[in-house]
Length: 546
Image 1 (cartoon, rainbow, N blue to C red):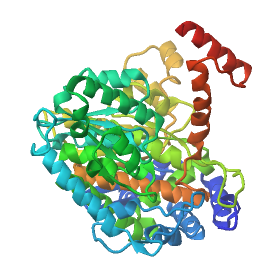
Image 2: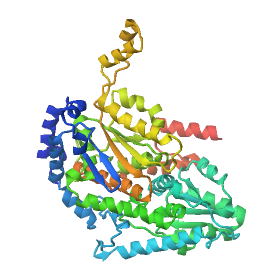
Image 3: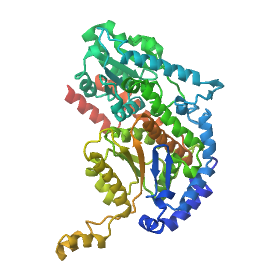
Image 4: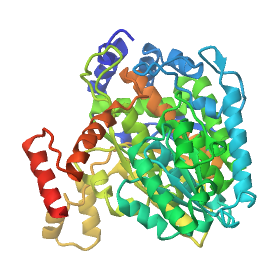
């Protein structure tokens, strides 16, 4: 794209449309069109998106899809799927879609079909997970390994944490999963205090096997195990997901139990690879592959559907509409399913690490907003925390509601109450409550004229606050794959529109570099050059620790 995004014709037309449309009320749009919900809904298998509760009309969608056309989205999608090096700052292809290429059609990188290598790793994962789950791969004392401890950080942790929690109903009955990511010693201690070394299998996930947080935690766990069972036990209780065979061997892990992955898969897109080994150990390789097939279903939909009927594209365009024209620089993801409680944390990395960029493909600083701030949590819990702001705050936050129609635990009327709450939130955000409606409600409640005068504005909801509702039949491996792939592609589309590289993460580097320079000062007598605040804080903390 030769122009900055905000200089494009379609962008300027959207700005003009926004000027005419910004005061339109959604409830008036619903009143004028009894078929609005059907018009702004998309179905894919047992997956339903209702995006009718948005500040849009047919003209809006047309202009947004025109923007997608003008930025060359079709060509960019083809480029990603064909293995072109669209990660332009690192000169790499972006091929997480190859990891779940269930059709097994050839995908080439530098002239070589990568599918045989991917299939070989999947086969190795199947063999190993079945040996562990069936008790053939035992610990050093001959006991079955039933405590799976994943040691990683970032994408090597957030994906496995989210997916294993989401698929809790599919775990083997005797398996428990644990996760250590934070360098805080309490993270290690919390897990190690609850498990038995004889039945524990540690999965160290680090591509380079040099990540300081992961390796520090791994060494602590190694010492704990060796102290309990002896050095010879390490190879029976540790496996690695890495590409650094030399360091893996040096750690004491049999390299036959090392699972590789590739530079064309970024960390936040990697749970579909051997990074998801802990997921496969928990739920079994059959269910892991069902998750891959669900993602593949969304991949094909994304690659083939017209933009106005394309779930990830529509969600991305709505995000651009609010972020860049309305100035709504936040959005929330609220799953009404307890097992999806970690999905918002996972999506924070996916979205904000991908879209938190301020330099475009023209090597220019952008003058428009890119990545919004994402937050969320499980409904109904969050209704009693930040939903006060969502309904009556001065910041308007577009919301994605995710609702499974069927629960894994149909206890009494729990699930009907849960769904009623989810649907009510979307309707309340859209409709709101006027001052007159609030006054009448207070009057019917028997309040005095003075109380009504005092309270009516406090009881008012502005409404006209946008949301999407995603209904799935049931949370299972296939549906989870579809859901995560949907958000991956949404983020990709927004990166194309903003003309940024969604696949590097250089913003995480500076703080890590500076931490490495401060560490020797905390551990000894070295002194570095810092601002006065940092210098004084180092001195204070050293004094307290002494």
